[in-house]
Image (cartoon, rainbow, N blue to C red; front, side, top):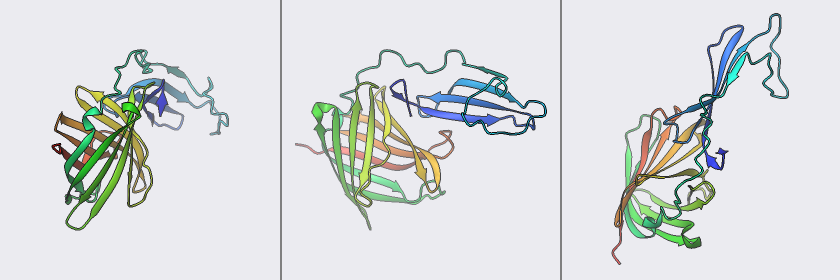
Amino acid sequence: MPYHARTALFRDTWSDFTATSHHFEEAFSYDAGASWHPNFIASLTRETGSKPQTNAGNERTPAQLQSSSAIGGADLQPSAKYRDGQHDFDFHIGTWTTHIKHLLHPLSGSTTWVDMSGTVVCREVWSGKASLEEIEANGPSNHFESLTLFLYNPQSHQWSLNFANSDDGTLSLPAIGEFHDGKGEFIDKEPYNGRMILVRIAGSDITPNSHRFEQAFSDDEGKTWETNFIAVKTRVSQ
């Protein structure tokens, strides 16, 4: 969700349960769950003789919060300066051949991969503030068509990747992120098989004539990741 114009992951954790007390923490992450920064800690103690009740206004009252504190300034106040990433996807403009490997049943223990080959066309939109990628690929028994709209937010200095395929014609939740040290990483959280999971898209091995995209899922809040889609692209000579 947005925080100080940037997109961050939020995590709420309850622990140390007893009949009369428990512990609550809220934390933010700007790096897809690789690190978490607590910003609110509360130790809650039940008042003697009180009964469980609902706080309709959702306020954290003194009786409910025995102690709370912000941790070491770790409220993830972003730096006032972020690099201008508007041209980070310029390398992607053009026509490419692609070889795709797709895990047939992610997060199921499956090791069955499907291979496809096809063509990728990516064109610039809004003078580089956006681009539109179209993929058409074929496998031994399947045909795949998709598009991805890449949008740059000049306030947050982050990109969003918005995906759709021809099978359902719906736009996915945007994966949001940026480039560091020549590698792009983009994250969203979405339902999959009835559970909320993290989805990570990464771009790497970028050269003028080739690059690689991978998609991975995590169903344990980013502790482990399972790669389920790999696309290696090679520029078509003009």
